[in-house]
Image 1 (tube, one colour):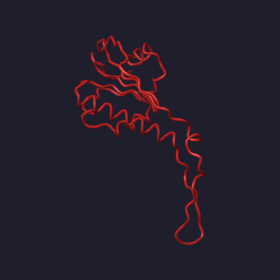
Image 2 (image 1 turned 45 degrees about the vertical axis):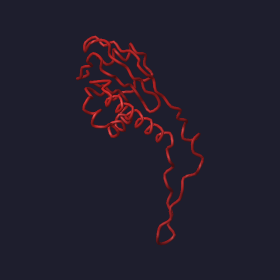
Image 3 (image 1 turned 30 degrees about the horizontal axis):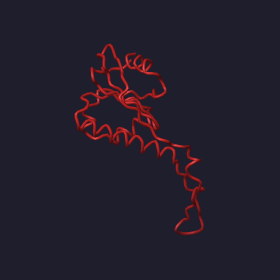
Image 4 (image 1 turned 180 degrees about the vertical axis):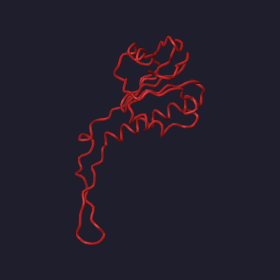
Length: 148
């Protein structure tokens, strides 16, 4: 059960690393009615489509020892950049007083990236967080899951 209320006119962000829905609650805290204000997305191909280099090798400063370097996860970097972009958009909206209350719904990893990127002006308006991926759910299902 969610321990937070979603007041009338609250902004609800439902996102993952590739898509974000900006929804506005046109109902009350007990009768959520979400309307889509904006849909944000970006193209983020799989890592094997973005990078073709083999992982590098590191050589010890003394001796002949070598070790492999971890391959860069370009897909994860793209998701992190998208989350930072969302945080920037929310900062601009908060700075323009476009919302008083904010609910953030995102998978745990994305939610963590968002938390690090949020400006204090956004953090002060957060009334609830839900660590779930609901971006592929229809709006009525999101409403039900947020009131459960």
